[in-house]
Length: 248
Image 1 (cartoon, one colour):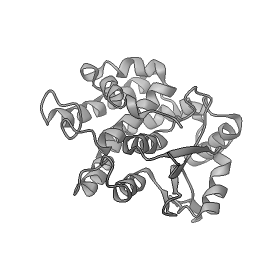
Image 2 (tube, one colour):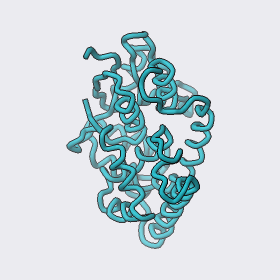
Image 3 (cartoon, rainbow, N blue to C red):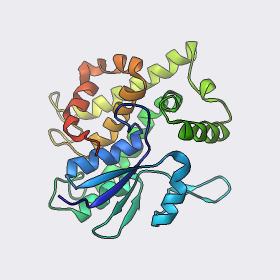
């Protein structure tokens, strides 16, 4: 089967190579849709140049107003489209490949966008833990870039970002409560429900699973706690997405 899509990802020293939650959203989506693709690996300092080269739109603006380029980005060789941002990529895949399993049922794209915002708020405490742990798994070229740019943005070192002592207990409880809220949303469909739309796996599940998988990869000691929260809900979610973790 010929390759339709080039998927740009950031490598790490982890055996799976891929690690970022935003990039896992797109990898899960591509595998779920069964669209033939290949991965092109870019270190952080290489991203902006490649995005400009292929015409990828910026994902936002830097503090000084210059365009900011990030991954994920896909380049569809069959249509010529170049798409940035995991949510936009998911919507594009559904629109362009309607004969394959849908990530978002018809009429739910707006609802999924709203879900992402709400779920991101519940998962926000992980932003204190994930980046420092991710940095330890990056290749040297990306690790230097990651530290320099993140510390300039946050005004503190990666080591200072990680909660410690009493603050750690407070922040970790916030995260547990956030996952508890997500669990409530699933159970609203019925106590036996596995996914946010009942028995149907959708992009909402992929969105959350990407963060759960990130934790599993870069914070294994924290994963040991999370995997038993809410009757093992989050370990079961990853198991349900196990067929879509292929890295090609």
